[in-house]
Length: 164
Length: 301
Image: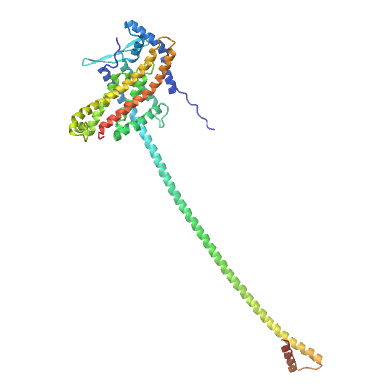
């Protein structure tokens, strides 16, 4: 048996090629390509879904984060405001206290001063009387005679006018 | 501490390739002797080189292995002989190997592909995203089985020529013509389905062509329709035949054992190249088929 030429057209070989190819196509598309392509598509879909879910969750968490940040910032501002208010109130209270205290102190001082003045006045008055009496006694003892109250007062008045 | 589980050793692709190629070493010594023996037996005056070439490249009505001739069946349709030749047997083997490999790869269902399934999946995804989808658009998923089968069938047929006692059916013009005729059929059928019979016929006259040019351009367009699958046929056939012819020529050069190392080195280098060419030509056949079918579906350019 001789060797057939590979360039010579052989309808039998062409037919066999087509038959074999079509049978292979049928078998493989039914048992291989369809499941493989489906698995591929499913996997791609699931990866895409996972990515989408991840993206959505990231967005959601970003949203939540912003919300929490806003809440925290609000709370911080509120706290600052409260502290500031308290400080202001405290400062006011202190200022009022100081004013009141000062006023009270001033009042006390005034009263003390008035008291002192009054005491001084009365002391001076008593002293003056005592001095007049003592002077009268001393003068009468010195002059050897009793000086009347009129003389006495006259003398004192003269001397006081002289001295003052 | 993390213990890395010991990887189950498996034969890698390089090992497989070198095993394939090591076939040529004994073949280089035996083939010329056998060929010259048969040449003497047949009484032809042809040299051992020519006999080697013939034996390696040509189709045969029977399958010869280790000197035994295995007869192949012959069928008749309406009196015409359709013989199962060596290359038809090789096609059958390629198809069976392809089915077995896919069955092995996808034996257990797995979400994350592993091992051999990766090999298939990389190619499936590549063909889907880079070849079929850009050319066939939204209907691409319906064509995927055709292009995938075409690619793997051509690939395995090409690689079978590098296997001991194997031959490339794609180095036979009848095989490539059979495959290209299916692409031609798809071009015409899809063109008619998408544009209607009249629309399809009208697409043979490019829009904007002056009326007096039509008698010139119409035959060119009609010839162009058949040139496309013809180019597919010739390209695949010639590439596969050429590679095997160079390998056979290298081995045929062995007239004395002294030249053998050089010849084997050359044949080995070409064999490695052939692995690449097997993938490349399968890819080219498939992408051109996709382009041609896409063009007949969308003729507006």
